[in-house]
Every structure is written in structure tokens, then in C-alpha cells.
Image 1: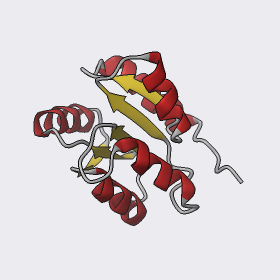
Image 2: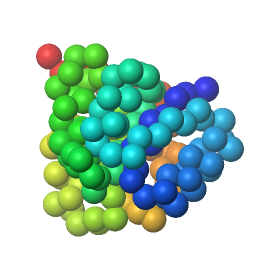
Image 3: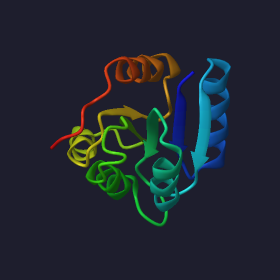
Image 4: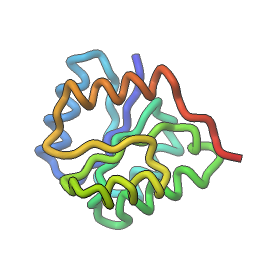
Length: 127
């Protein structure tokens, strides 16, 4: 099954999301800040990344930009997860390189649909 990297600093959100995804057959790995998320994505090469945008060390926007700028991780789909529900926040996440955007609290059926769509049709690296 697919390996998902969850980059989330809130322990309750991390635990809830990882448990719910693992029950659906996904393998989950976890990073607690943006810098650790970038390092773990480079080392583990997950199939998809769920990226909180409000993170310590480096925020999710910068972590996403770094991952998309690196040829080794550029093709890994990233779904931005944030409590910020403004259209400008969605646009900012997409401009940072995220492939999709979802709001917290997580609506699991909606998020699973986005995960499945990106796993079936992964993005290609931009030249």
C-alpha cells in the first residue's frame, strides 16, 4: 500500500490522522516540523505528503517549495492541510507547489478522495 508522510506539529492531529489512514491500509511516517518533513521526504520517498502549513522551524509553504525545487522529490504529490480556509490561502499553497489543498478539521472521506486521485494520477516533475 502507499506510504504517506504526515508533516504535522500538533500531536492530536498527527495521531488521529495516522490512525485513520493506517486503518485504511496506508503506511504512515511522521515529521513534526517543516525541516524534518523535507529531510524525511528526501530519505523515505513517500508516495504522497500531507503538509500542515503552520509548522515550526520552516513553515509548510517553504517546505513545499524546497521539495518541489529538488528533482529527487519534485514528483511527490503534496496536499496542504491547514485551518486557514480563505481562497488566498489555497492559492498560496498551490503557488508553493502543493498539488491540492484541504482544510482542518479533516473531512476524511473528502481527503481520501484527494489522496486517491493524486496516487492514481501523480504529477510529473516540472522541467
